[in-house]
Length: 331
Image (cartoon, rainbow, N blue to C red; front, side, top):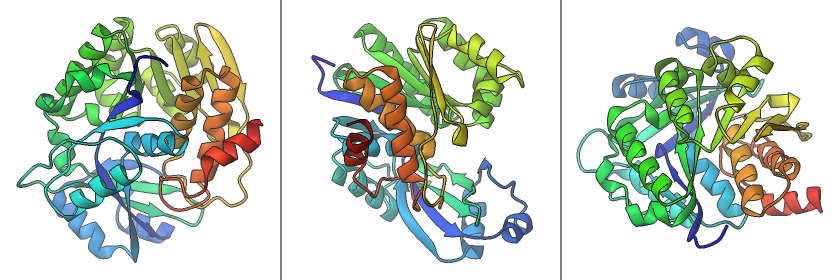
C-alpha cells in the first residue's frame, strides 16, 4: 500500500473488557443467554459487576483489538473512538497508544462513563458478553478528521458502532471521505443482533458500491441474507462486495474475492481458554496479509494463526509474538 500514512484506520467502540470466570449456573441465574452479546444499561452493569467473581480489566473493543493485532504484526494503524474523562477512559487511551496505535480523540466530559464489556467465561471457553456502551455511543461526526481518513489505505468500520445514531452518522461521513480519496472501506458485521436492526442499511451500502471488504462469521452471513443456508448466503453476499471474508470457528475460514473462493483450515490450539477476540484477531491477520500483498490463502492463514493465539489466553489483545508465529507458519 503506497502513499499512505496508515495501513488501516478503524472506527469503533472504545471499550474496557472486564473478564471473569464463571459457570453455567451463574449464567442461568442472571438470566443470560450463554455465548451471546447483549447491550445493558449502567444500572444493570453495576449490578452484574457486583455479582461477578474476581475479574481482569483489559482494554478491548472489536476494531481496537484488530488494530492491536495489526500493530503487533508491524503495521501502522489509527483509531477513532470515544472515551469519557474517567479512570477507564485513561486506561483505554494509555493501552491503545502504548500499543503503537495513533489515537487523538479528546475524552468526553460528564456522563455517561467509558464503555465496558462484562465478559463471563465458562469452563468450555464460551464467552457471554454484556456491553454497556457508555461514552462510545456519543462519537460525533465532528471528530472525523478528513486528512486522517485520507491518509489510511483502508477505513475499517465496526458494525457494533452502527447501532447508535450519532456514531452511525460519523461513520457515514468517514465513508464519504474515504471513497472520495480512493481508499478502500471495510466493514465487520460484528453480531447477528446488529444485523437484525441494520441489515438493510448494510445491504444498501454494499449495493451502492461503498463497501470493499466485508468480514463476517457463518451466523452473521446467514442473518444478513435472511437464510439458514450458509452456501447460498455466501453466494448472495459475495456478489455484492469485492472481498468477503467469513470465519467458521473450528471449521476454518473462507474468502471470496471477485468470485474466486479460497478456504483454509483452522490452526491447531493446544489449550482453548477464551474465544473473546478471535474474529478481531483473524481480521488483523488478513489485513496484514493484504498490506503485504500476499496471496489470499496466506492472508487467511495469517488470520487463523492470530486467532489461535488469542483464544489460548484471556483477553483480546495478543500476548505472544504473533509476527513470529506467522513467520514460523508461513516461512
